[in-house]
Amino acid sequence: MPSSTESRYADCLPGTWLAERLAVDPLKIEAMRRAGELIAVRAPGSDEWLYPAWQLEGWKPRHAVTRITAAGREAGLDETRLYELLTAPLGLTGDAARLADLLADGREDEVVAAVRRG
Image 1 (cartoon, rainbow, N blue to C red):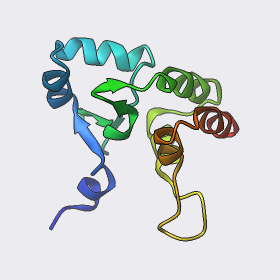
Image 2: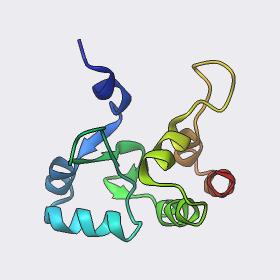
Image 3: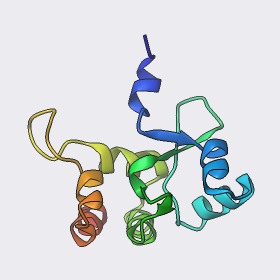
């Protein structure tokens, strides 16, 4: 049975796996995260960055990710809070859409606006 941490980040990929899949050096993935080109989160007590798969399209970061991370930084959100905001249900039921789903639907302006509100 997966732990609650594993379940919480089930939509994420380890940076080493992502680097291999994208055929880039793992240091490039880290540089992209620091530059706001990729969203990443760490499980409590871990030093490994995890990268949500929903931010990728055709194994490339969606263009909106840079805008989203910039809006998150402007709103004072750390990586964990940004991830939580993007993956929280928007409605009252557990099966409601998430901001990550809106991003996948191409509704990036709505996602950026919601992140700015924090």
